[in-house]
Image 1 (cartoon, rainbow, N blue to C red):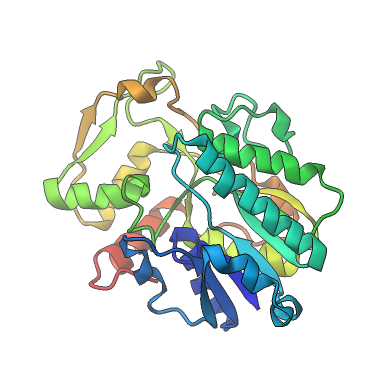
Image 2: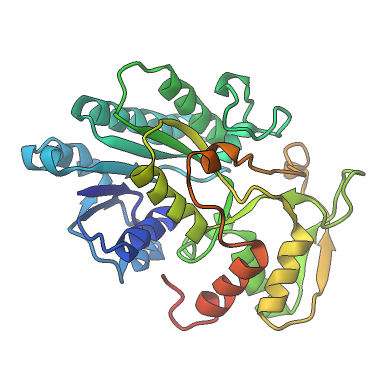
Length: 323
């Protein structure tokens, strides 16, 4: 049995799709649906059961469950980088993850959880997953909540037989439609271009970067979920791994890919960076991917242009945009 928390969310539901693609259906999906459209993310998926988040530990402590669990993929947490309630973040992103880690250690089950590239802060220390998490300085409460769990996990001596933290960079792709303001720029760009025939991009305030040449590490969801499976299935080592493409691209690169996939001419509306972002805006992120690739995993299969074309043409432009 494979347990996936956050199973109705973006990465969680895409990973359930990945498992189904591998012929795996003995999945228990854990989440709270809430009031948005995330329930649609699981409409086409095959799984054994759906367990509300609050009932998970009662479910886990049943003897039949303990015997049959192969591993827990913990993608369920608060993923909003704008969340300011630190108590809420500690409860959901730190303490709940601790409980799952301890359960997997007690019963010797594999444990994979979602960390975040937000732990790297402004990137001054680099984006190397071998860095001591104590040396990282996140820029917001969300990043801090992820960083302190990474620190805690690395300090433990009583651990699951394998545990892996995944530092996701700028993930985009099908299944993110319920995320609102937290959805990817690809998703937002598609709708802006469709509705206005142009795309708003922030001007640069850093003389080292021209307008639109600010850079991010964009990673397609299909690369991310494949690596999640490969780490679980083909590796034995524990630790923290970056999940990025490994090569930074500019916002203009991304914009051009979306316009091209939509068969529209490039038209950018340059806007000022909002005051609340000026102090914390990142001009460059790039995942160091050596550790993951040295673990024997496959290389990235979805470069930006190919991935955006797949996302736009095969999902966003379709009547049914879901995996």
